[in-house]
Each structure stands twice: as structure tokens, then as C-alpha cells.
Image (cartoon, rainbow over all chains, first blue to last red):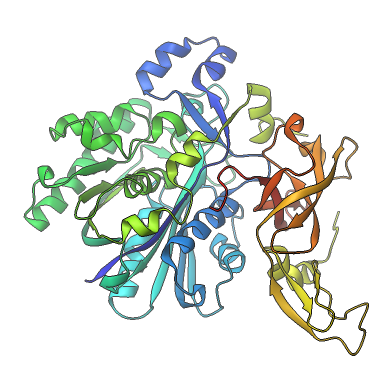
Length: 348
Length: 139
């Protein structure tokens, strides 16, 4: 297996709503929720943004950094649980908008919050086998939480795109190894035609998130004969701020190694985009030679772990597009009625 | 209500999804939306495809308060004529992600791929280019 990231790009919508703004509407203690979830605010897509538009922005940023001919992209996979169509791929909309040729394979993926990382694994296989030159994998979502539900404080919009190739001299970061852990665990779901997801409350913790993230992390470390201490930056999926920090405690990971990818506090949980936004934030600051460990999590349930080593190309390439932090810091606060209007919670 | 037929939309995807227009090599004029015939040079003109800059500045703008059907959710919204960089053409488009008080002639904007219109709950979703204020120049 020889593959690595030749281009990466993030996109976060500009609007934000504060946790206390939502809490006030439902008569809750905003500060207590902020402390509990470790989320201050979340990114809200505008009324005209969806998974396709977020994916296109992220993909264009990835292309700016990759400096490849877009016609050489041989696969496009978009992972999301909020594809604009039930039947009609987001991936071909992205292909058309970025100017890809018609000579590519494409599919939309769904695995709760980890469909984007599954897409990376798929294009890794395709480029490593020589079937394609480059593959584009995107994780993006416009996540929804029912009004008044606990998810409303975290479900956010955003995404990240990764172009994967097999030439070592083009890699911003080499993907050293990957490993996945999956099981049938119904911690969170959305039935056909249901507008909002349902979840198993506390069941989403220990048997779901913690078991799968820990198992995938341990599995990859064992596969590589490595220790978590060998890595300079660690990203665990961030459904809230509490879970990944709990996982860090479990593995005795110092907080400094978690901070560069810890985007959830100011962005919320962008579902399929979440751990990938964390990875793009790390690549924005990582130094050549540093090692990155990423574990995604998707309810239902499964985790994909990746070990990466940053190349010296990173310094030249990161300046070619907006960094994740630039998106995090470019924001316009909105009130609850505006948020409700943007997200279709009010029918017109 | 069907605004435009699906085949008609499909024919325009490659131009609507990005600022891909045309250029008359004889009189050096840019066209967006693209023209297949130069109105000045007529049959003697030579039309070629041209990709325009994603960046530009507002030439003039207006706020829409009485929208056509299907755009009620976006009211009030700004429509602007944007002069694209590198001597590009003037393009009409919505300006989004911008506080109305910050709209002004000369405001630097960049192209943004957005949802334009949904043909009801079951029809096709139209995408295209709108503009948003530039947050970081040259990126």
C-alpha cells in the first residue's frame, strides 16, 4: 500500500449560533450545557448551502493545494448523512463544479459520521492498486437536530476534502497505515423520510463511541507495532468536546497533542466532516516529519483509524488555500429565529 | 412549478457551476453567460471558451424585498453586478453571507457555489454561482 494526501481543504459555513442562544429558547442553562458538552458555538449553513455546496468549496481548496490537473481525478466519493437527494449523487455535482473530466468513478457514501473517512480508505485502495491516479474523498454534512433535542446544541455544518495519490514526491502527508473496527450497534439512526435523527441517549457513549474508537485505535497501533506516544497530533471524532477528551484520558494522551485538531468547541459536530476537519486543522499547523493519528467514528457503528507522517511539502502547500482556522474565525452570529429559518425548522 | 426544463438546466451546468464563459478573439470581448456568436463581429468573430476569475468587486447592487416565487426564504437578499478581476466581464449574481449594512460599491467578493432554487419538494435542485465577501484576499 502506497498512498498519501496530495491535497486537502476545509470549508465551514460563516454563520454561528451560540449554545446559550439555543438554550435560552428551551429554558435550559446554557453555561451548564457548554461546560458539559465543551461546545461554545456551532457553524450553521446558510439557507442556500447543503452538502453539495460545502463539498465543492472543500474540494476546490484541496485542488489548490494539490496543484494537479483536475482531469486526473479518477474517483470522487462524498460521505454524508445529509445528501441533498435521496436518489441522485452529490459526487457528480461536485465533479461537474470542480471541472473534472467524465472519466471517473463516483458514489455517495453514508455511515453516520464516518462516511468521509471510509471514502479515504476507498480511494487509498484505488490509487495503491494503480486503478486511478488520484482520488477525491470528501466528508461533509449539514447536520440536523430536532428543535429542543440535545443534538441541537452540537449538530453543525461543514466538511473537508482530501485528494489521495501514490507518488511520494507529491504527498503532503503519507498515509502509513489504516485499520477499521465495525459492529452492528444501534446508537443513532434516522429512518427513511424522518426529518431528524433519533439516538439512544447514554447508549451512544460506552458501547458505541468509546468501544469503537478505542478498538480501532488499539487495533491500528497493534497492526503497526506502534505506541500512541509515537504520534505528535491525535484526532478522535468529536460528537462533542467531552468524548474525545475522555478518550485521550483513556490512552494517556497529553492535552497538547489533542489541541490542534480540536475544532468542535467553535464549530460543533459536523458529522461526516468532523474528524476530517480535525485532520485538516492539524495539517494546517503540523511540521514536516511529525506523525498524526486520526480515528473517526460513525454511529451504527464503526471507526476508521489512520496513521500519517507529514512531509516537507506541507509548508509550501498549506498557504495555497484558506486554513481551517481562517474559516473558524470568519463568522457572523445569528439568533435562533434566523437559525430556524436557515435550517428549514420553519416552513414557508 | 417548473421554471426551466431539466434538459435545459443540464445543458448549462458546466457554465452555471463555475465562471466558464466565452471570449471573442477577434474583438477581445468576454461573455458570461456564454454567447455562441459575437454580437459585434457576427459571423467573422472567433468564439472560444474562457474561464474567468473567481474574484471581483461590486459595481452596483440592490436589495430585493419582493421576490419571485421560490425565493421567499432568502428575503431580503442582495443582487449585484460584479466586475470580475483580470478585465473580466460584469456578472449579475446574488451576494450572500454578508450583512446588508456592509454592502457597498467596490466591495471585494468571490464566487461561491450555492443552491439557487429548489423546484418544489420533489423537483430538481438548481445550483450555481453567487458571490460572498472576500475574507482572505488571494486565497
